[in-house]
Amino acid sequence: MGSIFQGFAWYEIVGPLWLALVIWLGYSYNKHIIKSPEYDVGSGRVKYFYTGLVLLYLLHGSPFSIIADHYLFSALMLQMSLTYFVVVPLLIIGLPFKWFKKYAWNHKLRLSIKVAGHPWLTLVIFSGMFTVYFIPSVFNVIHASIILTLTVKIVMLVYAFFMWWAIINPVRRLNDLAPLVRIGYIFFASLALMPIGFFFLLVLTAHYPAYQGTVGDIFPVMTAVYDQQLAGGLLKLIQLSSFIFAMYKIVQGWVWREEDEGHAYDKNFRVVQGVVIRVDDEKK
Image 1 (cartoon, helix red, strand yellow):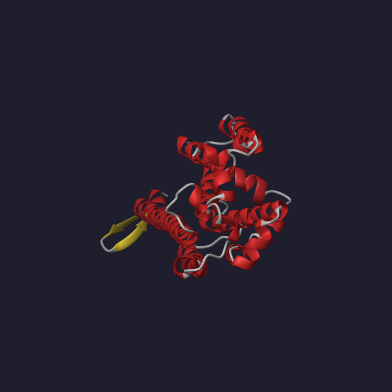
Image 2: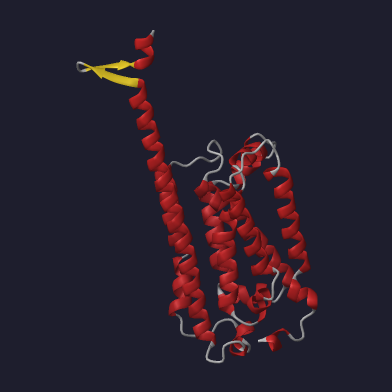
């Protein structure tokens, strides 16, 4: 396994820029959020945020990124799927909603975020870009240029953030979606990426020349077609798992909110001989 990294510079293996970025984000989070009296951050949010940061470095700064860029198409798919469907929501959940309210709703960028992050527009753009990116003729052109690859991935990262913003709904007054609508949103998001997933699983021809000559260097029994099929399976597994978990949390929060409202109703009202009396009025 060590031989596959021969010929790569140390900074390609270690990823110092990604390491510096993750350390800076972690330090800023600790200084400006955890230690700030303005925010009440529970241990759960802290774990989510730092888990997202660790995953971000492992996927893009560690030697795994070399495997994803040069050896296995399935590793690239694992890298992108985990980034867009796991890391992004972890980072959003890890930040306190009061922070989003301060820098989104009560900020001069509110209108820009509201327009650029329109839920349904975001869904179309992200799904469309993700699908088009993996069309073989498009992918082979983009993958040949580091600048093009980086640009496309950054834009998709931004729209993945907006997509999960609509699902998680950290600022309810900014592009607010009701729980049932968010469940429908997740359903359509999963449908939008089904064609590219089935393409990888069903097509029996290798379409990505950049990986055809190196796919066997790590797993000798692996072929380019098997690599594509594994990529399709990983995409659907990670995407559907994250969406199903999100739907579960939405339904759970919806039920809890309904129960809280019911308890509040029970405390404020009393039935006396068939007549509903508000407790506050009775005290008056």
